[in-house]
Image (cartoon, rainbow, N blue to C red; front, side):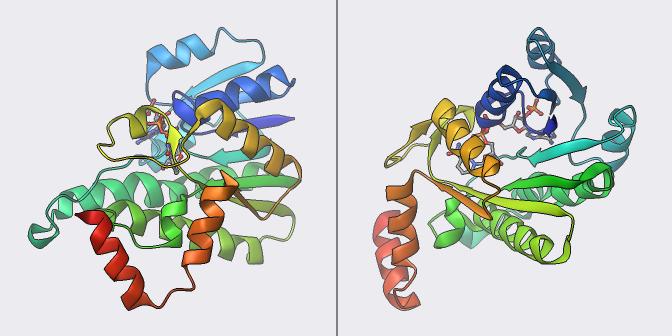
Length: 236
Ligand SMILES: NC(=O)c1ccc[n+]([C@@H]2O[C@H](COP(=O)([O-])OP(=O)(O)OC[C@H]3O[C@@H](n4cnc5c(N)ncnc54)[C@H](OP(=O)(O)O)[C@@H]3O)[C@@H](O)[C@H]2O)c1
């Protein structure tokens, strides 16, 4: 099996790359950080590929030597919070939408034609999409776009299975900077285990840790005004 993973130089993507390689897959680990890519390349079964996922031409030229994939996992992403919504920072908004959502479009144009018939496409979104959360105007909007994109692709792609991933909190460099409690946070290793299991079963949606994501899913039945009141309380 040939598995390409974006965002493989850190956190969840790095664990996915190592675990898939240990299972015997040929892994193409992607990212920008050349030092981390060189470290990954020391593992058996891992090849590396360097590109900025917000640059279509870079993706196309970096992946030109790879003819086909069985699995493509679009996991690269970043999070920046909106600290002052009244003075909206459109540059921050653009950065987050660009790496989390537009980059998916570039990767799809470059990589989807190379996924074998019967192969798999995995899009990593976030459980933030279940409910509007404070300071998440940019991150939440970008990930809501990813979730919609994945669901729509699942309808339109006939010979490629799409899996949409909604992680809860995972302890990685991305969340190290969070200055608030992260209920039921799991390690990147555990997150990769949940994902590998769900992807293997070709699940349409993989979400974890279940207790956390099920609580969020249940809260979605609340009328919007009531949820907004609760969320305003969380923001304080
Ligand atoms: N951690 C969580 O709690 C959590 C929860 C829900 C969803 N997620 C999602 O899970 C995914 C992985 O997150 P993580 O926590 O593992 O984050 P992480 O440790 O910060 O890793 C992010 C990865 O994305 C890559 N990346 C960022 N910008 C890129 C760009 N412009 N071009 C190419 N690669 C880029 C980084 O590689 P380079 O720096 O080498 O480019 C890195 O490998 C993200 O999509 C995130 O939104 C995470």
